[in-house]
Amino acid sequence: MFSNVSIQIRVIAAFSVVLALTLMLGIMSLSRMNSVADSGVFIGTNALPSIKEIDGIYTATLRIRVDQYQHILTLTDKEMDALEKRMEGAQMDFEQSRKNYEP
Image (cartoon, rainbow, N blue to C red; front, top):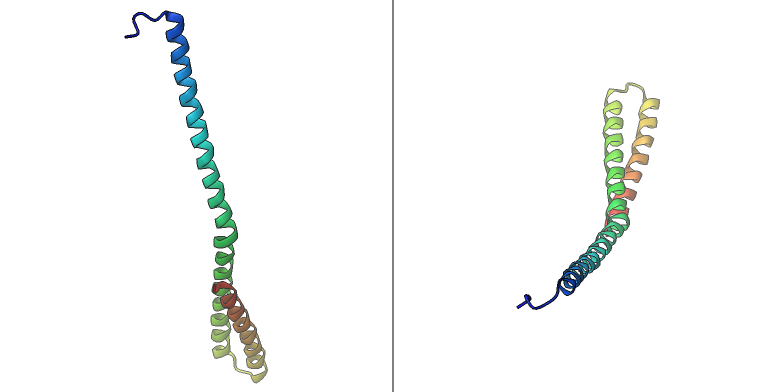
């Protein structure tokens, strides 16, 4: 079939096929890169803020637990009152972070 075609035409056809395949690969790659960029935007705007709020919940929970432990070990009323105020603050931080986390 191609035996009657000159070498020059065959080489031009081969390079044309390679060029067309390269262009198709480039277009497909750009499309996929756009998809990856969209995923990155989604993660940056939706996933990371919620992780920050989860960290706030975790930190507030640890503060509450440490304050409760210290409250149990405290002997004076003055220190107990100070720890109770710190626990209230940690509880408010916990509630705020939980409220921010909920959709």
